Every structure is written in C-alpha cells, then in structure tokens.
Image 1 (cartoon, rainbow, N blue to C red):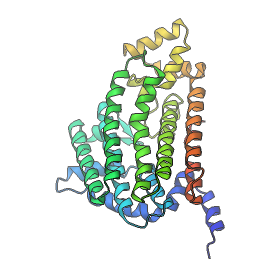
Image 2: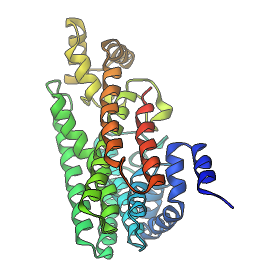
Image 3: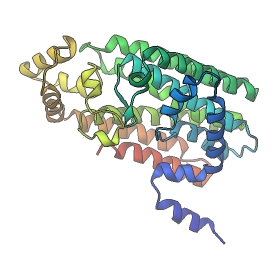
Image 4: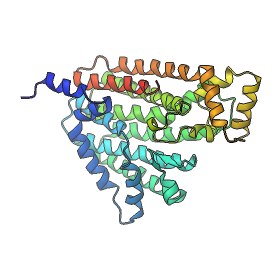
Length: 338
C-alpha cells in the first residue's frame, strides 16, 4: 500500500516540474489527447506544423497550472481538461507568432517552424490554434473562464506590440520593460492558474490567490529567461543564447548594464542595439559588459522577489500536495538563473 508519506518521498526524487506533473498526470494525459485531437485538420500542413512545436518537449507548465488549480479546489468535472488544452493552444499560437516577428531560428532546441515551413504558414496555423482554443473555452459553458482567457489573449497581443516599440530603444525604462513582461508572459501564467480555480467555483479569495501566483511566477520566469540569454547557458533555454541581443531587444540585463556603463560601453550599446550594427565578437563583449555591471545578479534578485510573492500567494492553500508542488516550481524557476 502506497501511503501519503511514501508518495511524497517519491515525488521528492523528481524535478519540481515532474513532481507537479505526477500530481496531475491523469488529467495531463487527457489534456494531451484533447490537444492532439483538436489540432487535427483535413489540411495536412496544420497538424504537421502544430505537432512540430507541440511535441517538441515543452514543459507544459501553463496547462499544468490550470489542472493543479482545479484539483486543489476539488473540481470533479471534465472541463478543466478542455481549459488546459485551450491554454496550451494559446501558448503555442503566441510562440509561432513570436518566432515570425523575431525571425527566430530555434525553439525548444529544434529548428523553428517558421524556418521549416515559412512565415505565412506559421502565422496562419497560429491563428488556427487560437480559434481552437476559443472553441474549447466556449464548450465549457463558463463565461467567467472565457472572459479570463480572452482578456489574457488580448493582453498578450498588446505586449507584443509594446515590445516592438522597445526594440533598438535604449531609452526603454524598467517600468516599460516590466509592462511588456507582465503582458507577454505573466498574463497567460495568471490566467492559466486562475481559470482552473474558476471552473471549480472556488471562492474569490482562492481565485485571486491562484491569479497572483501565476502573475508573479510568470514575471520571475521571464526575468530568469532574460538573464540566461546573457549567461551563455543555451541548453537551459531551448533557444540560442544571444537571441535577445541579436534581435536588439532591450531587456532588464541591458537596461541595467547600460545605466551603469562608462562612455566606452555606452558607445558599444548604442552601436549594437540602437543602430543595429553588430559584428563578430559583439555578443561576447555584451555578455562581458552585462556580467561586469552586476546586471545578471540584479535580474536574478528581482526574479527571486517575484518568486517569493508567488510562494506567499499559495502558502495558505488547503491542498498541501499541490501547494508544496507550486512552491517548489517557484523555487525551481529562480534557481535556473544560478
């Protein structure tokens, strides 16, 4: 007989992401079945391109948050599975669109879909997946959830437009940067967790707790990603190190490094970011400037502060297994930076 203590010990041997998966494994398998069923189409290109990204080894963290929140709130229906699939479709669609906008060549360690099939198919398949997501949301018949995920989708699009304005722009402030991160990344994390609690008809306080957890986790997650882009640890990212640099994105490490730069370093940043004139060896120089300025350490510290807020948001949840797993996820998110 497997006792609760033995199960907890077994989960302790897993990574935090795998431990959370273990708690919602049956629901995740059901969500995966829905995902593969609903991305089917008589137009062969659609499932082929979708499968290229969906089956490429992503952590599926956002749909796991939906399922974990529903389970923590005692939900006994099936609509949370449809919502998890919808969340994954929204996330996949945004990645397909992102890679076209950013002209990315690598995603999750594989050649990006836009490189294999081209920009136009990537955009159109992304639109198809957005439509599938909304079909699934409507099928749940839950207007509150539909509102939550619909708003998140529009906020993500706003974040993309805001990020375009900050590219090549060294006058971007920390507040500008945080607004982009909140819209592009945190909005879907927050909505994913919130939707799981909503479909379970949880109290407003519990729904708010899951929203706050996802919001703060999402910001911490993106801060760490942006720090890793200047850390040289490509394997941990699933994309090429220096992508943000090559795309002249002004992320927090650059904002901090530029603010603390001497005249020579400022001339460098203006050339490679504002003017977009990048030469061989510039990425290594940029990494050296960022590290010397303490920007990586500072970005990691900011991520830690948001992760701590995420932990506090769920610290009083009545479901100890889910609570502890979510806390471990927040810790894991920040530890990736070190």
